[in-house]
Image (cartoon, rainbow, N blue to C red; front, top):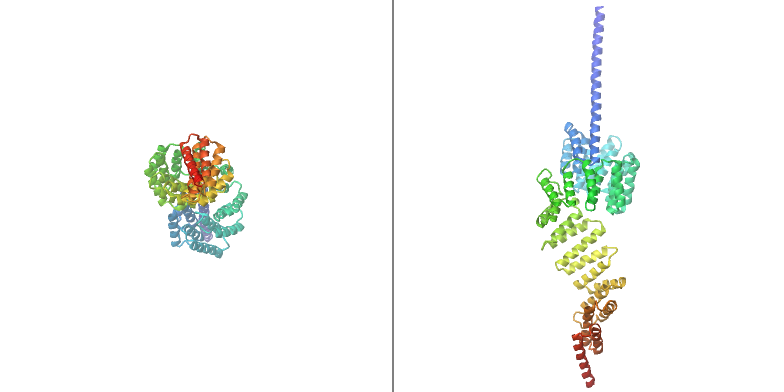
Length: 566
């Protein structure tokens, strides 16, 4: 019995040990499973913050995971993506480089490093990393669509000159085959199509709509469609898509911000509403302070806006790139051209070219052109704005402004060069454009072009004076030493128009032009009857004109002596 008891006791002990061991294993499995779920939830939370453009919150979410596990490749990748969204390319580069040096050779980190290299202009090196990442995932199992999407995302980032959109489109199409229910694929596909040029706008439109087929409430897709029509100036369309994005997801801050920017200089009350929507749905950071200061400027509260901007300049927001632009605008409105010039020039000298807006160059030129001796610098800024802007009407405006500055500094030849470019760019030149080009041609000594433009003006607007006047002026200028009298037909045509239109109103101009005819007929052609006829024209509008009377008598005496001699 004692042996049986001992055996039973030992068996009981063994069973207890087994149970305890199983409990430990179960606990560890639960802990591991729970930790995996928590980590996945944290990653998803961070990605959601990126979706809403809440970059501080996203950074905090991913940093928390990386701080707990410095080898978590997925969290490291997304933290780097957050840095890139904050325009901190060097921070992302440092993060990815360290992870790879520490031996975390995960394909997603190779893609992240390739993303950085694309923004640095190293397309070949980036492509090599992308291909390595694809090869690594293929060796492990099968193609990973998430790697392909990350490659598409990398190429979609940055200005149109960055990345290889055609390569990215190829990879994203393959990702769509593997994972057809991911709207992110089609959004990045659309952005890459836009990078290929305006001729692919239809492809981008289709891609964004494909994302909406997967998720009809995807605010990003609606927002991206709105951006297409915003670039085209189609208010009805882009406003509809932006408001649709907000309706689908009231927390989607980028749509509020674009609507604020559109209405900021059009309807300050509407702009305020959208700014409030943006501020309520984004992280409280330097950008929020900046846009509020910007709103104060738009509302005409220049001193308040300036004070707010100065406060930011003296605090943690001092490195915000566009702060100097806001300072320059406020100083300009408050009459301090020196400070306006210093701030806008400092910004343009240090800001990455892809972050500078065309209006920044235009503003700089407007400040400088009012400062004597700064016109050439103003012209250079306008030329940069011209090269960076794709809107045709804006290009025409820049060219016309450059021409006016050359006119101001007394350079008629360059003025004509830019007015010709403007005229050739403008699909529907106005009567003023035709006149301006013709008059500029006269000033630059190009009488052939002047004659062509004023002939066009006279043909299109026969009831207006400027065609006749320009043709007469150009003809007279073409015969500067008056040895041929070639301008006579144009001058006669001009006089006829003036006499027919209003003799009293144009009396002095009529007399002046008849005076030209008198000189040509009497002194160049020795056609005295024609000279007397021109003098009669003067007397018809001014019967007491002393010049006409005395010259007429003198010519008659010459004719009389000539007749006696004969």
